[in-house]
Amino acid sequence: MNALTLPDVAAQTSRQPLPLDWVGMHGIATPVLIGGQRLSAIADAGVSLDDEEARGIHMSRLYLALEKLEETELSPKLLHQILQQFLDSHEGLSRTASLSIHTDLLLKRPALVSPLAGWKRYPVSIEAHLQNAVFHVELKIEVPYSSTCPCSAALARQLIQQQFVDDFANKKLEHAEILAWLGSANGIVATPHSQRSTATLTLRLNTDTDGLPLLAFINEAEAALGTAVQTAVKRADEQAFAFVNGQNLMFCEDAARRLTTALRQSHHLAALEVRVVHAESLHAHDAVALSRWQREA
Image (cartoon, rainbow, N blue to C red; front, top):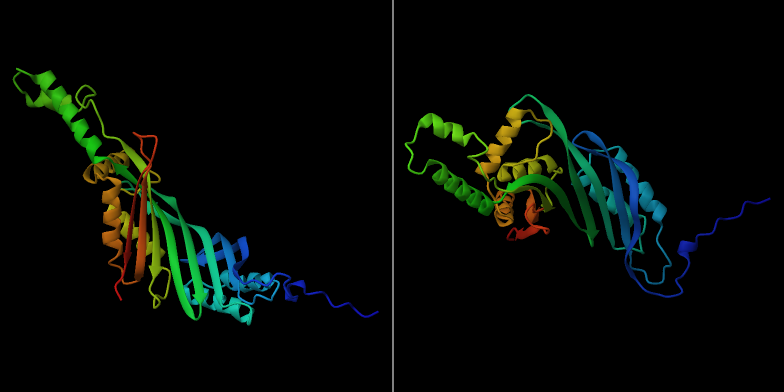
């Protein structure tokens, strides 16, 4: 008995001729190699369907092309190769290919003072596009940090000043007594509010960038802000963290400007978008600022 030829329904002619901008798959589980780490990732892969007569694409060909992610360090070169394979396997059907990879970069970060260290999670997305031989890569990185409100700090200082006046009015000032007052709950009657905040960095890489400089961008962002959230800490680290917060008071506008100014110095970047969210501890809503920059041609 002769084996029957399996039907290729996707190769049939569409009953409603119409090109489609994107067809593919979301949520593909895949391992990736980034900075020597094998990470669990989710990929979205697709192509355009420019042949309006074709009924569909060959999704299995996209899926199989992703096997390269298991073997090779993730880089713009590798992403370009995969996208080109997407198009080569859909010759005559597609002119545009895209691949998005979503994962969490794990970095071990030291404490501020003590010898402790711990792991921090940085959500990362890598988005690559290839259209008419034009290729580009964008990185999206979430960086958590602490922000202390300058207005709240000023109001707290004013209350402390008023308490000082109330407690020491018409009294002879003694150094020891003032020192004790400064260390007491009666003296520091108010503290400024602060909150865990998030900077989302969207970074368009230059076409000649070889690798994915994720760590460099994260380090640059945390240095610009000065108040990266911590992992394992002792009391000395917590005190040091309180100090750096006091030295880096910032509104969301300040944070967005700091990050944009620092990151646009990178020779790896063609464009960037910075979005900061301060999850207010005073208000029931968030404070948000957005900044965009593009390198001049």
